[in-house]
Image 1 (cartoon, helix red, strand yellow):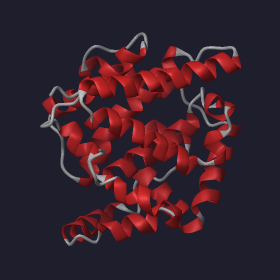
Image 2 (cartoon, helix red, strand yellow; image 1 turned 45 degrees about the horizontal axis):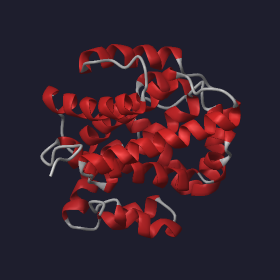
Image 3 (cartoon, rainbow, N blue to C red; image 1 turned 90 degrees about the vertical axis):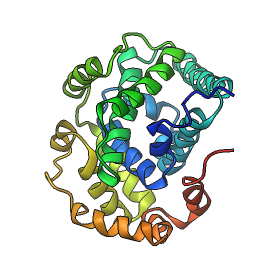
Image 4 (cartoon, rainbow, N blue to C red; image 1 turned 45 degrees about the vertical axis):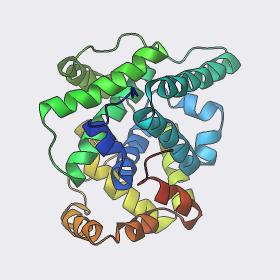
Length: 254
């Protein structure tokens, strides 16, 4: 059976661990809030109304692509494209190609950053694997102007970080929604996780410290994981209403 992502790819290792996924979306949630196209995420009202639900919905699509056989993965990508096309039709405008590229760039960057924070440094070949997977996702979705190599992506990523981000009223509101849905303590943990993985440009725009308070605790977390109590730590990070979704993060999708 042919899979969209090879069974031995590091991408499966990255997206098969709940803690890594949570860090990926911690970073992406910070950068999303700064995007000059964030108004598109407000158009349907789903993101500010239920940011955690939106997170798990996005995770389910990403994991369906990473772990499915090729044709099922392509159908999942086509479903995502159809959802976006429907939103565009309702608004009477097109989501800019650079905004689509930004999302793919975030998934590439935070997959690498999060895994390296929690696991180990990736070599160039493994980073290229991460790039290849999301390049194929973007190509299937019809996104134009994608970089064709990891080296080209690195240059374009820096350009996007400097050109396509700004602090706006949407940024302020979205972080208020994070706080509302997470509660004060979990919100503080989110900010520290974001500080740990976001690039310098994002950190500066959000006025984050250079060093996260979580950094010294990573070793302790890894110890907890080896003792099989990391599920408890995940439960502390996210509200109890998402227990089922939290446990599912560590299991390969059916």
